[in-house]
Image 1: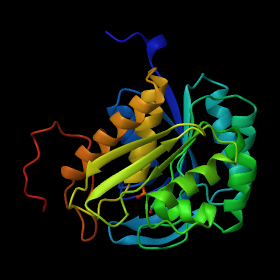
Image 2: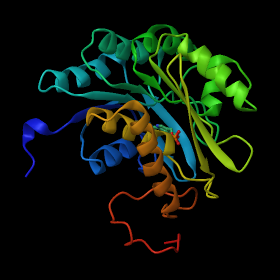
Image 3: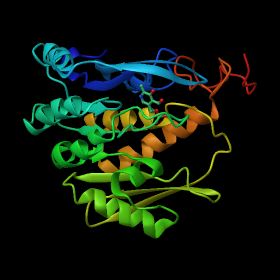
Image 4: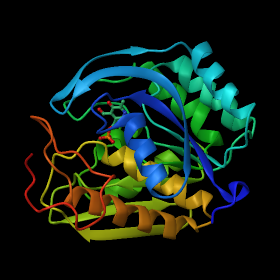
Length: 275
Ligand code: PLP
């Protein structure tokens, strides 16, 4: 039996994806599957399906703050995971929240573009994120494209990888996880960096490319595992395995990219990926 006081709680802050592949919906499904209660606050609402993002509206910083305050007024949360924030003002709201030490285990997935290339945040908010938010955060989890945007470094090999991780570490964030799944070559290499030690996670690439929401799932899983007391290296390793399994089992529900499935037990899904 689970005692309510033992339940770990995470607030996911980001954009809604009505097709459930990415964004807040992917966060909720991941957190709950991993045994963590998912609170949410919406920063933006997107119009999208498996074929891509059509449009979006960004909610006001005041409205975002009200949602977060409603939760924090009511309960203690053990972690925060952010995704699409949509505006500089919304980034600042999260900066107030994290710098005020109201929540620990802050994991920032710096969502900048959708898979189809559509910008999901104004360019100016990227500087605000680096200067005002990251100095107070526990971890940032960019993929290569996001790391390039954030640092201006072209990432072509592992040396560039280290350069980008070091540049991001200089913002003051405690941990940097650069995810190299999109690098050329047969291996997927991720680099976890704390300013001193470089930890590499090397796995064979899974030959399935078009699964949405992998970044959301990864950051949510890391946050969940940290709230459950896992060490950083172990939390990242376990989150990687979790996401890899989701990619392997993803199915085609719409007409575009594949969807990760959270609601069935392993083995219930056939190898046939189509509906
Ligand atoms: N959040 C929202 C609302 C999105 O629409 C997207 C991508 O389209 C993302 C986050 C990032 O998705 P991914 O996990 O694939 O990087």
